[in-house]
Image (cartoon, rainbow, N blue to C red; front, side, top):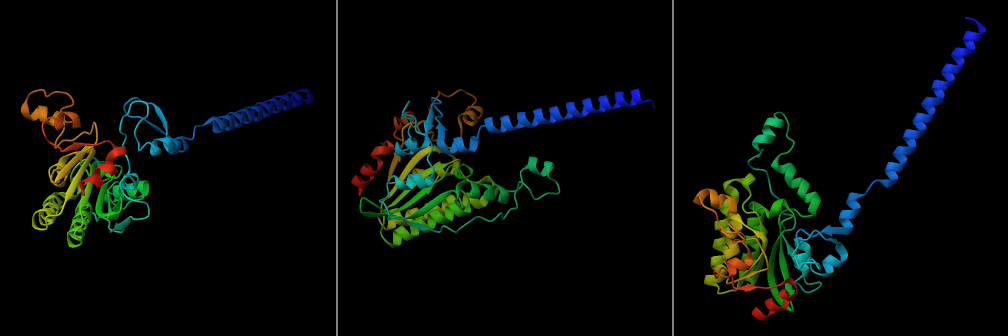
Length: 310
């Protein structure tokens, strides 16, 4: 190789190295810019919520102060069970019951799709779903129960949480409600149940359906034998086995405005009957016109209205 050829090769190699360094530097700068400009959606979700009706962005702090009612359109957003407990219960009087009770995957349930996708895996089982929602909500199951005071009046309160698997009613939900009612009966306390559920838990099969009869039996003793008060408060949505059991067994049934209440959905009814049904026929205001409930009460008036009933 001549000296001239050697210098030519050196110049080419130097040029390639320079281009590579510039390209790597440019990529690194672009990555850093994207990192700086990336949106922290988790942080946004902790600070803001979007109205399901008008799609307005709502600052969560102000939304909680307004009891999860949209200031723009008056729409009632879903509340978690902890916030709902604060609505009627006096400060520092809440004593929870059965906080450590959790469900077991007795049937070792897997959906058909999950079996096809994970033939040799334990992933995506009912137990995994439960664990996910326990971490997500900080609850052991879809209800909180306990004893508290409402304007100084002792009450037994159960609050379902739709954020936990859609408020699915399984064995734990049924057992916690039954124990609450039995304690209220023994201590001669009124029972208030706040319902928000998609119905019985399909992953527990007949075990979940048995809860309907168990709760109804406890309520029979509470209401008929002991002549004690049971108030049912229906929030959106209340459907399925909850509607078919303790949701509709209240001595007084209270509903929030514009709540979706049903046993089965509109599509199933239309397919079964073979005819169209009117829009919004499963909403509070339409159902109230057919005497399905006793009272429609807004959230800001709920505590005062309840204390007037005792």
